[in-house]
Image 1 (cartoon, rainbow, N blue to C red):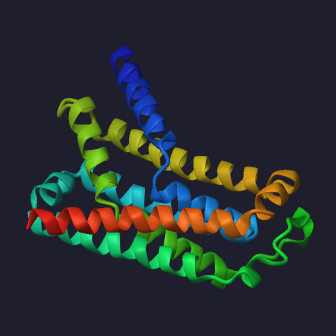
Image 2 (cartoon, rainbow, N blue to C red; image 1 turned 180 degrees about the vertical axis):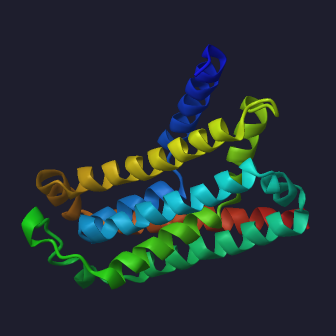
Length: 218
């Protein structure tokens, strides 16, 4: 690989990882999933978020991302639906009674049971969170526009896209495994009721802010 391509790869990889470090709706969902379900099922939300990122990366690579971002109606629809989706999740988090947080102490890895239904629900939640967040599309579009020129081969772009998708997935899985650690998770689950209310309020505020911003611009 040429030195210039290595430089581009490193620059994009660092910028992408720094963006991952900034907590957003996806991060909050990962934390909620890691605390309330076992990690085998919680990986579904990480896979869903990574898949949504892969879709936007792919769209940006083939040029469709620029068309979508230029369409006011599509971006407005994404924002409204995304905001309502976050508010929906927040509503269920805020209304959950204290009794639903009982028996959440971490279990040993060997006793964790994989449930395809739970995994699928987590996947769908993660995918919808990622795909309904227009900031993901705009981030990848701006990153690729600045860093990738027409002279760069499609093979390199695909490699870069695969790398970023893998990093999104591995980062979220790392968070899930950290919070699934017996000592760490047991400390968190003692405050799970309050943590879920706070994360629900954060998601609700983000969702409301998104919908409000669209409404005020009309």
